[in-house]
Image 1: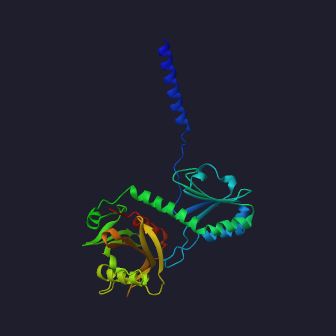
Image 2: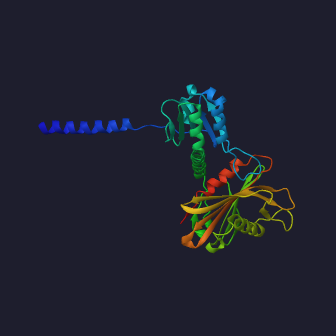
Image 3: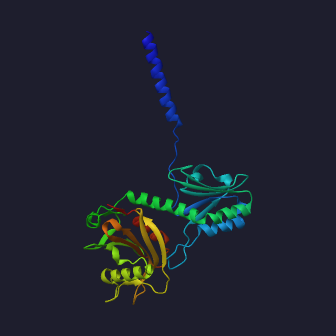
Length: 325
């Protein structure tokens, strides 16, 4: 009888501990919201004043390399009083607060999952403005990375299953099934998606590691290579025409990293001589030193008369899914 009592006590203890662990688990709802849309939680008076001006200037920073000015993010402002319930589930939130505790804080999955919440606190308007300006790049990078991840999550729901790219180039890259292989030749792949107003495209190929002189003009080297590829593989509507870099726009050069590999990123616009076809491109040269090569991934959009931000960011999300096997 004594042994039975001990056994019952032991089982009860295990069950109570198990129930306690379950009750302590935090249940977080699924996040929501349109891509590239930031919820800004700030008092209406601050929003109408200089604080609001600074927030708008940061979040509507122009996407570089587009033929027309387009903001990086759309904005949905709300006062703190209505920030509850469904309003807290947006994927990206910027909260502005006034109080004794000051600083800049980033929270992950605070109200929903996946989610990034940035909180900026200051004692007065001037301090809030200073904190916002000092952390501009961090704000933009945090929200952009969150939206690229969200775009990649959508892609994962309907992946293209063509494996030739992986077999030929020894890489993994994830893109939606709605894209199709437009051209495949040796180590070159052109992949495209038809749009109502044009097409969204990306190319993948490789060049020898010594094709890029790091001490030279990187932009000019990238343009020379991409123009030669355009001449060989991307013809225009007129005989002898092809896609080339548009000379009227100054290209932007950035240094970044893809798959933990040093990468040159060049953004500008392309054109086809003798036609009105033109649009933005983003070119990434990924240093694959182990395989003695650069992997070149370029996205370009042809979408006349409509905004191009979302198309370009979709291409960026595809390219940044690259993994070298």
